[in-house]
Image: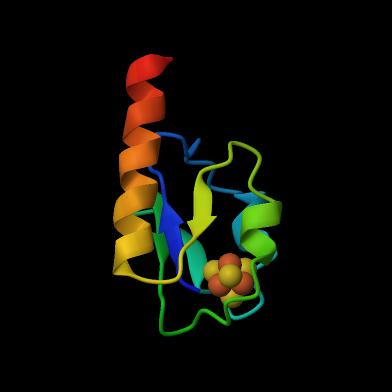
Length: 81
Ligand code: SF4
């Protein structure tokens, strides 16, 4: 299951704890872009990063339909809070 990063919720921590748990380094803080970046080709779908994301900005999804629903739900939560 790939990872979706909600950049609005991500605290853009250069020492991101979630990324530090990613053994294949699929999740890394890009200093040039000044944000967390994700490489699905390296991801082992272990879900470890999701568990260690303090701001709850990382989500796993199964397919494009689930990603679409996830984005809609996150957007809905932003407009109701
Ligand atoms: S699911 Fe696992 S391998 Fe993939 S980005 Fe997260 S920690 Fe890294």
